[in-house]
Length: 414
Image (tube, rainbow, N blue to C red):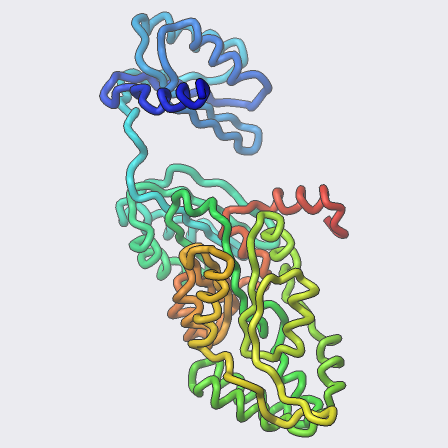
């Protein structure tokens, strides 16, 4: 009980007065061991409090800034930190009366850029738009250097929705992918990732693979393209394509399963996010007979798809039950989120076709992955590189963290 009481009392300890004068001490130069310790030891000999600390090391160059309350003897304090800087061979800047002890500005967002490659002109365009939106870039750090360059920009002072709108045009113009998310406590919560399958989780369309066995691959492919572009009603197009499969032997399903190729990075994405407690769902306009084995293989928590009718060992050209269409995909996302007790705002949806649009709109983060133009135009976020694990960078995970985790688990190729 005593520990609880002490903790409660600490909640009411007054913070440093927001208008109290402050001093900003900044050390820059070659990084080396023990710099922060020596600086804090020097500051500890004076009557002051630490208000804020930021440290960054870029290519062996250190930037260490410490904001403190103004001591009674500022000259003595400055002499102490200048001595530390001289002893370790760093430059030192001391700025008095900064007044920068206020809370960080409201409107906190995270902007993630993916470039393949990433050119300076693209960065200039994005940062200019952030400034024009009233935002300030507090920090930039790299999440990955291959197979794409991924950067995370932490922005304050601008609304995330405004940033998304303003930055999308610049990103498209300069050929980079961009995602904007509001920063807050919910970013740390468990998430549910809901994926389309054909041309997203896997390369190609399963129904077209089956059509090859029926000798109608070109006809089915043409209808598929119309449906994915939103030119045909999905249910109508699905039933029309499935009818062309009448008479195909059930054994063709096993042959197609063996020929399925996952999108590069798919296994890495699932493996990485499962380590963090994420849940996964597959929501597909494809077929249960092929989706179920994939879900089992990858450790997917939920899935829904259409079921092909099979009689006497052959496809009848019909599906059993209601079709998983555009509206059905969005409903499945909500249903799986409710079952996992994860708020819809903490869901991530990934898809490429027009029948994914409702699902992408319903999710907290909807990502058009190598999508058709109609989908890219309507989705809030697009990824146009051919690596599915690029999605993890949008969630703030670095390439180095992925590789370290794989090495710890002895994952082949890590």
